[in-house]
Length: 314
Image (cartoon, rainbow, N blue to C red; front, side, top):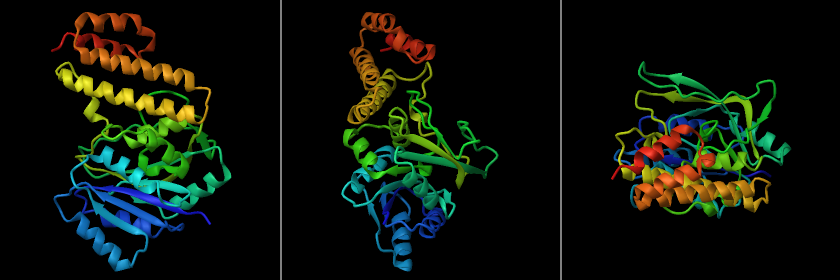
């Protein structure tokens, strides 16, 4: 009997969270556990959820409030740690304001059971825009002629679909979070999707499994690490540290699977580690020499320009 767990991070979601909870509760494949962590909401999100659990007498559902605000990245990391001790086969991420179609989890688990080579299965979505000022994220185009399409084997800090569409094999989730250190401000969806992609264990189910609602205040999870010339030197350094840790975790996952990409991933991880350390040293000439002698490792010329510009900042 397949067992599943849903991991939901909450924060100030009392106005819209019940619709998402409804779409989880009514799944044709009922989750065995729904684990929620509230990141110190200033509204009554926790009370709303507790009342919902009591109203429907939901065994296996729980919510706990963090002792301090972690931010959504580390909140999801903590949820992945929480589920390590649970006896489940598959894990689903959930945001608090999207709507799942009722056969979402069942359809994904059917594919995962048939395809033991897949550790992460994402899916397509509908997008509902509720504000003229809302931005709509670009979606990577998979081969729609296939029911299931493999992820591209491209090493980059991104995700091809939102994390709430992911179905992860539990053992894979455990492997990833075991290398994800406390304090690493990495996006859970970027980390898991690229770790799976670089080990040839990620795919997309080309079926829409839910509705993503865009409001005026929707923001990209990576906005914190978008840079301009006016950005501070510390923001530059902090961002490089995130990238270093991101690539290091992926390299460690690949090593666990003894994947052919392990060697190049370790080299890339070492490059990002040195890049961070050189930037942190705040020595102009050391920065310049590093860029010159490592040009082939840079993802693009924008990254080169970024390091050159910030090498002169104090």
